[in-house]
Image 1 (cartoon, one colour):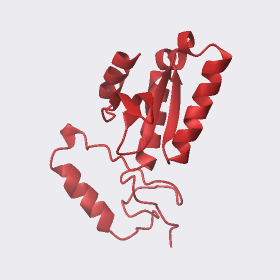
Image 2 (cartoon, rainbow, N blue to C red):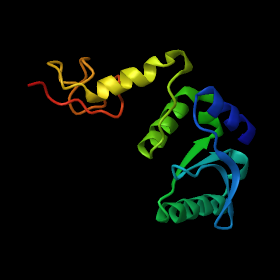
Image 3 (tube, rainbow, N blue to C red):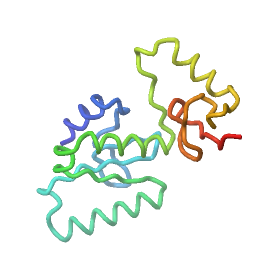
Length: 151
């Protein structure tokens, strides 16, 4: 599944992870070191007995103790719901500091519009971007901004 995971990351615009990364005497299937995110690709062949189950939980707890989160993606989920798995992984990476690059088709307008929306005061819509974003949620146009209640 590791080769397919590289293609998966490219297809969904995710950063490329380090594959089979050695850490603390173990090998991680995929690792995003800048964000402290580990992805373990779990097929039934290697995870179907009690010892493998216990080892996986011990490994996850050790990593969490070092502020590394582990996402386990089963082969079934990887094959049957790749859009969902990609969206979830992207959300996790973003919460840990990943900022996806602007799409190429935005061109120079991407930096201008994001700068304008970041410095524009809140409008009657309740959001600095001028859209009808819901207060307390992420802004639709500037994901880092949080809309405030309209005055």
